[in-house]
Every structure is written in structure tokens, then in C-alpha cells.
Length: 354
Image 1 (tube, rainbow, N blue to C red):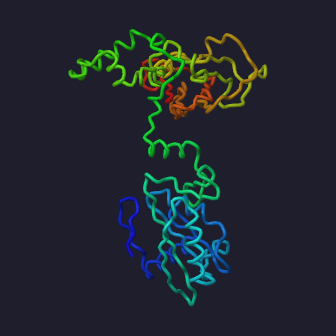
Image 2: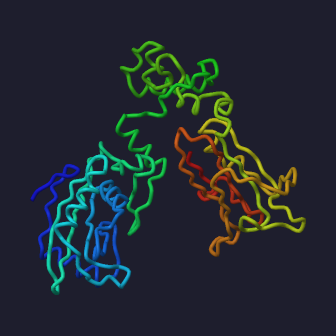
């Protein structure tokens, strides 16, 4: 039997291949990214939708292997009734959206029957595959090693963005207007684009702004606010980085006065200004005040002393942020006993990706 999945040909495994797969799983005593074992010795497992979803949402698909019990050391126990098992698995497959079309293979080993249900990958444009009874948000899963984990909001949104061709950077910011943009910086950017593309210079001013995604339907876009606005925090207050200096080498260390950090600074501006964070990270030489508590707003990291570079290392915190998620700020910590490297050193710049 031949099925098509994700623009690739996938053939049903043969009985001898199923036996080889079963022997491999029993020998390794472990499941994998594409193999899930179910005993099915007494009845069909009641909850398969998490594995059906996770296998359908990965390019390689996966195999549900019935008749092997992982709770007793991955021993072959055989299935209770191969015919009834296939019927009940198919019923659960039909409760998925889009419906899953499993391909079954049976094989006998030591007088016991085992069954494989191959789960093909769903086309990328139709993902995520989810259990209709739980809904798209709670019924979508992703395979991680031998576990089926619920999809995060970001993973779900990624599929929606692909399916509906969403471009977050082009969405308009209702309260913004062109008067709030840095005119000099914007003009330099437009001149650079015109120099690179001779035909681009023939466009009118309005056409230029539309083509560069500065405006969309004459409204300023999110990309324009993040890159050219005089004060983007007026529209997105949480867009920024909070940098702190901690007294020790790890979060939670305190000094003699029980202070949790000895200096802090909030870094604001456009994305380009925030990326130049090495010019604004507080240094222990300029501690203006000594607050005793700190509220973490996001990912908080601290640099530790290295054995190779005795003078210490700069912080390098990578924080991937979606363009729509400005509900939390990013926090950055620096150990007080680490001396900063010269600014021109290739290791001297901590980096933050927004």
C-alpha cells in the first residue's frame, strides 16, 4: 500500500521489517522520536491522540507499536485482538483534525501477534494536527524524544502564520504616525535602498514607504516603530532590557549588606539601540544606588568566571522574542566580581537578540 505524506512517498513496512523494528526496540529497551510502544494486551489504549498528533506534526511521521509492554522491560506480550485493535485505533484516528490515515502491519513472533500503525506526516499547510475533543490549543502535541508534549503558543502561532501568510512586522500601530519617526535615520535608510536599487528611485514618496513596509495603507507599521521611532516605548512600554549587577557569580548571591544586586539600568530605544547593549550595561565602577530586591521580567542570566580568562567573561544572553510579545521585558545580570574586557575586544560585547 502506498500513501503520500508531506510530498514524499511512504511505503507500509513489511512484516519482516516490523519484526526487526520490534527486536531493536526490545534490545534497546527504549522508545524513540518515531516509535511509541503500547501493550494492548487486554484492550486498545484509550488515549492515543497525543501520540497521533505529535507523529502527524513531524516530517518523519511515526510508528505506534502494539504488543510490547515497556512497563515490564519492553517485553513482547502480544495484542489482545488484532482485528478489534485496528478498528479502535482507526476510530481514534478519525477524531483528529485533519483525520489521520494509519497504515497497519501485523507480524507474529514466538506465537504472539504484534501490530504496527504507521502515522504519516500531515502536510505542512494543514498542521497542527490536533484532537478535536480538546481543541486546537489543548489538543496539539509535538514529539520530543520519547515524549509527547503540548505545543507552546509560539509553535501554534508559527503554523497559523505560515497558513495565513501573516507578517507581524507589517501590522499597523494605530496610535503611531510619521511625525514620531526619526526623520534623519529614515531618510538615510531610504537613500541606501535607492542606491542599491536604481529602479526604486522612480517611486513616489508614498510608494517608497509602502514598498519598504514603513507604512501599510498609509499607517505606520510595527517595523517602522521598532526601528525608526523616536521613543518606541511610548507604544510598547515593555520593549526593553533591564540590566543588573549582582554581587556574586550567580543569581541569589548577596553582599555583606544582604543586597541582591548593586546596580541596575533599564535600556530602551529602538532595536538597533538596544542591540548596542554593551555601551549601557551597568558596571560596578558606577553604582548609583543599592536596591535590595529585584523582580525578574524574563530570562535572567549571569556570567561566571572562566578558568581560561582569569579577568572574566562578558555576558552573552540570547533571548528570542516574537514581534507580538512585548508583555515581558528581558532581564540581564552581570557578576560584580568580573572585570569588563576592553570595548574593542571581540568578546567584550554581550548580545541580545529581540
